[in-house]
Image 1: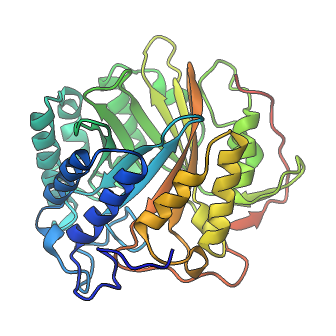
Image 2: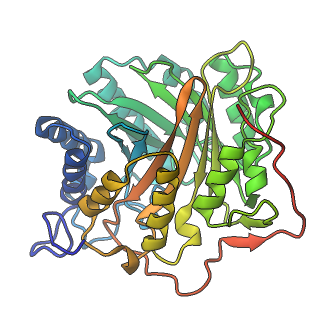
Amino acid sequence: MTAARPGDRSGSSTPTLGGFTTGQLVRLCDVVGLEPADAEIYARVLIEALGPSAERPLDRPPPSESLLSDDHTPVEFSLSFLPDAVPTLRLLLEPGCGAHGPTQSGRTGLRVVREMAQRWDIATGQLDELEDLFFPASAEGPFALWCALELRPGGVPRVKVYLNPAASGQEHSAGTVREAMRRLGHPRAFASLPEADGYPYFALDLGDWDTPRAKVYLRHDDLSAAEAGRLPRTSPGHVGCAETEEFFRTAAGLGAGPGENAVLGGGRTQSCHAFTETASGLASGFTLYVPVRDSVGHDGEALARAEAVLERRGVDTAPLLRSLEAVTSRLPQDGVGLIAYLSLTHHRGRPPRVNAYISSEAYAVRPPVTRRPVGVTVKTSRTECAGEWM
């Protein structure tokens, strides 16, 4: 990954945020087999969603201190992998990244999402039902709204929105999530969630999804593999999931032994609990997100972990390698954070899928870590996996 390409910082002219990220997007579309016409449509959508920030030169600071990425680029890419299938490309962006404060950012984000909904004939009734909860007159928190697009052939994506449960104050996060789930017809959902250290995101599927989801994200500050295996709440009894535990060990670099008592600290490990039906009060889907960048010295190590996770599930690793080459010309060992997260998703009735989250690095590359990463700590007591999750 050494050759310069359009949109790289190594070019002769200073690129803009929009030019840089759309260049990455177009190349990623090629990796996953989307037609050039589709790539052009999605690049235009990205430019329009960023608004005036798209024209901002990269030699100026980011338009805001976006929480979306370590270098505050308001764009992130991800790939979703299944065996014997072409990966699905997804784009996450912050439409209100150039706004002054979370209140204005949220209003800008809502406007952009509703413009998308009008363009693609997507209903926003559920989002409208929650507007007063997540977009108060004086909003708080590090973000207001993110928008994710799952890019499909034909130029019409699936749309998701991510909202901030702390918009009315961090102390109200749990109550906001509980009320949001009640309004959406899931009055028993909140009680079924595992213990958590915070509620960083609430998400909704909008439009053309087979089973639209309401998703609650939980933060886990210090998590062991055995504890990770007990997070799913998709079946009565909450028995442990050996596959989730194994994934966590591999992605976090905690080792394979059942007696290992290391934990991944730092507060960026997350779980997501997706709800689609109301009868049982249980989630129908579960995802564990491991911040791989917090426990590696450089992206060569992160890539090795991602390849191990994919190979264990019979997934071809070549598209991931090509995707990294599409995003950057730097070598993996020259920085850390290009692969930000790895996640494993289970959904009732579907095969598990692996997701890799790829940073744009439009503004900065984090230097390699030459010492033991601080995210890995050791607990004084050990816990064991409770059993299998089916």
